[in-house]
Length: 179
Image 1 (cartoon, rainbow, N blue to C red):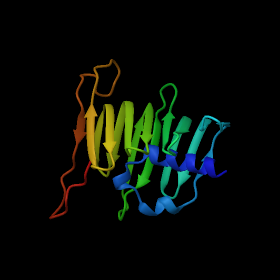
Image 2 (image 1 turned 180 degrees about the vertical axis):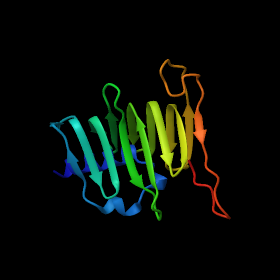
Image 3 (image 1 turned 90 degrees about the vertical axis):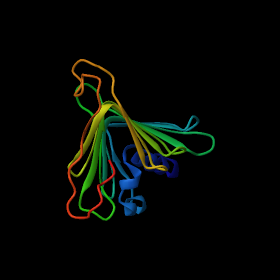
Image 4 (image 1 turned 45 degrees about the vertical axis):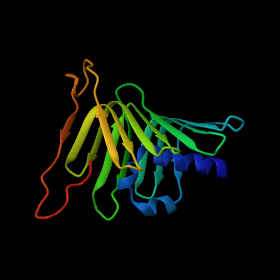
């Protein structure tokens, strides 16, 4: 059970933008619902399938499949995916704010060793009124930096091969939110 909980915690981190995350969420219990769970204890792989919903405090992660693996050093990787037109998604309240950070993509990965989240294909991240979209978005929690790229794909929200960003003006002396 401890391994399953550890895997679920990593899955939480897989989809959240850590610098924005509500810190108290880490102290909350993890709840996961899925149609099916497969555990390969020897290889340290947990697979949740079918309408997966993970919640921990203000964090919610949704996907068709969530795979969590653990390496020999105890670091975990989480991969949330979606099938068809649906996208894997996360939503979490920002620290000290009523605003939420939301993201969606066909595949969302998190590496606990490097503390990097990567969103692939039809990727979008929103924080307040600010938005970034592209084929690929990477967030480094240590440096608090984003990288967004795009690939020209027919039917993509940014099919022209360009990254899109909308940054809302901030009012009177308030710092712009990092996006």
